[in-house]
Amino acid sequence: MQPSPILQRAIKRLALTTKQGPHNYYKGNRTGAMGSHTKYGGYKIDWEKVRTYMCPDLTDFELTPFVTRRIEKRKDEFGSGGPMDGKEYLRKWKAEGGNI
Image (cartoon, rainbow, N blue to C red; front, top):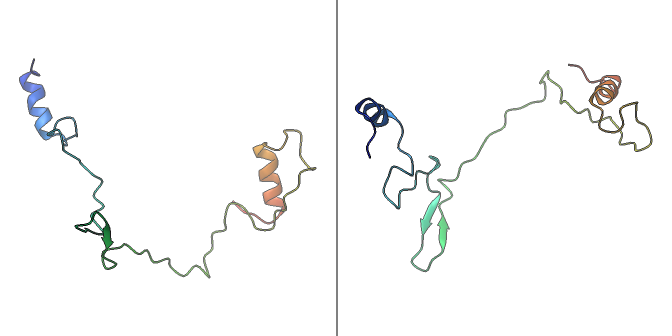
């Protein structure tokens, strides 16, 4: 059973999936290898291929974290909604200096 001619043209333009390729086809996720396999079954990492991410300097960054560091963990103090109430959490967060 084959797809119709119109569908055959559309399939040629689509990305190849693992079901359409050969039985040992592995698509991967474009990450690349960070080393090589040794002849003894191990793996040797090439540290020049390892990705490193640089974080920018955030000292004068204007945005604040969603959870303020000044909120204390209290087990005895909850609003009407209980410990999982979102409105009570946001009320406490704003009272402790959080800004949206």
